[in-house]
Length: 331
Ligand code: TYM
Image (cartoon, rainbow, N blue to C red; front, side):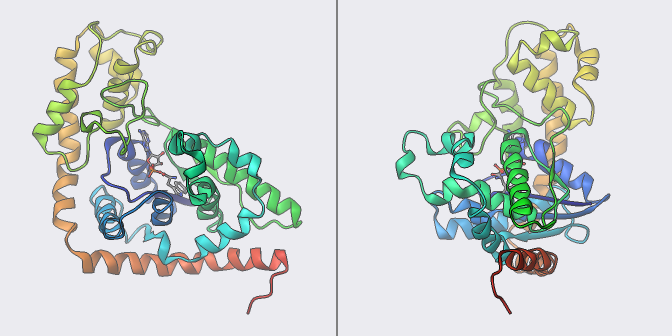
C-alpha cells in the first residue's frame, strides 16, 4: 500500500485544501508509506512569475510541515526535482486519447472562453497527474472531490497501457475522497468551491489569516435566516448552512449528523462563534509554526532535496519498466 498526493504551490493554503486533503495526509502518514509533493510542474501550466514560483514552493513546503506533514515519516519533495514525472508524462501522452482529455471539466473551467489561447500544458495537465501517481505504484490517493475525474483518467490510462503492451506495470490507484469536507465551499457563495483563485479573500480562510481575520470572515459568511435543522435532508437544501456545518464537523473530527444533534434549533448567531472558535484554535498553532519555518530556506531546500532523492529511487523501476514495455532502448 502506498499513498501519493500533491498540491500546487500557487499562493496560500486555505481551509479547503487543509480539510479536503492535508489533514488526511497527516493521518495517513502514520499508517502507510506516503509520498507528498508540491506540484510545481503543474503550476507552470498557467502564466507564472519565476521568483514567485520558487517562493511559493518553499512556502507551501513550510505550510505542509506546519500542518503536520512530517518529513521523517512521509517523503516530501517538489515534482521538478524528480524528472521521472515529466518523463513518464511524455510516455503517457501517447497512451491517453484526446477525446478523454476533452471531457476534463477542470480544463474547461480554467481555460474559460480562451480555449485556443490556453497552453498545451494546461490541456495535458491530467496526464502529468496520472504520471505523478502511476510512477510510484500508488494504491491510495487522498484528494478533494474536485480531483475525482483526474484520478479516473489515471486509472483509464493505466488500464490502457497495461493492455496495449500486455504488461502488469501500472497499479490502479484508488482515490480517497471521504469525510464531511471533500468539497469545502466559498464562504460567500454556497455554489462555488473554496479556491485560491477566487478574487474575494472573504470567500476563504487562509492558513495565514490571524485570529481576528478568521473570526471576521466566519461572521460575514453568507447564511440564511433559519435556525439549524435537526436532519440532513433539510440541511442539504441549504448550501451555505451545509457548508458551515460540514466545516465544523471536519475540524472537530465529527460528523454532520452529530453537529446537527448539538446545534439543531439554534441560529447562526450561536453557531458562527462556535465555528470561528474551533477554526481559530485549529489554525493558530499551524500559523505559528509556519511563520517560524517559512524563512529558513536552507532547511526547507535540504528537506525537499532529501525527499526527492528517496522519491527518485522509488520511481526508477516503474519508469524503466515503461521504457522497456515500449521497446525504447536505454542504458
Ligand atoms: P490543488 O492544489 O488545487 O489542491 C490540493 C488538494 O486540496 C483539495 N482541495 C479541496 N478539497 C476540498 N474543498 C476544497 N474547496 C478544495 N480545494 C482544493 C484538492 O482536491 C487537492 O486534493 N491537480 C491537483 C494537484 C496534483 C495532484 C497530483 C493531486 C497534481 N498531481 C497527483 C493528487 C495526485 C491540484 O491542483 O490540487
